[in-house]
Figure (spheres, rainbow, N blue to C red):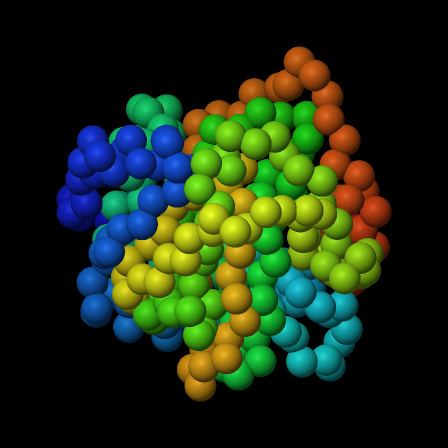
Length: 265
């Protein structure tokens, strides 16, 4: 682990904003040099389709057939394939932010990377992260969304519905109602009060596990790279069970590859 000291110390106003609105925007948690290095690592693992055989690389917004151009490529656990991503100033700041927002038991958890290709990268529909997770558990967590270039309205910055973290998990469905697609979309949402959050390279947004969020398509001439790091306190078992039927209905190529990979081990 890096011996670097954190450079980001949240103000009480920032902490209050996260808990009141369900999201927070920070201008910088990294350096230009670190961002340039991370872009090289990021582009390398996407070019390699790292983790595809295990089901960890797939098209989040498409049917993910072999040989088909992905509309929204994603890699789960990119730091598994590029362990150097577990180090760096951004990671030190992420861990420090987690304890400031969630308390001393908060830790850095898993990561994933979403790549929006230039010119045709698909939108990420409105959803709540918790809709993907285990319905038998209760969570206190956030996702830190970290772009490796400027995130703009044109290339797919995040949008949030303020205070939607106070909602229960809403009903979702697979994108286009196609069970072959891993990505989820909320059934109904009023996004009239949504807030767009363009940020510079090395900045980040932070959102609660129930905050409704969206990212538009990439209509720009450059790729949009985002690394997402999850942080949270230990999840607890729910007294009242839930059923996330939208996940049970999936029949994705990603799941088939993951099952086949697991059977080989």
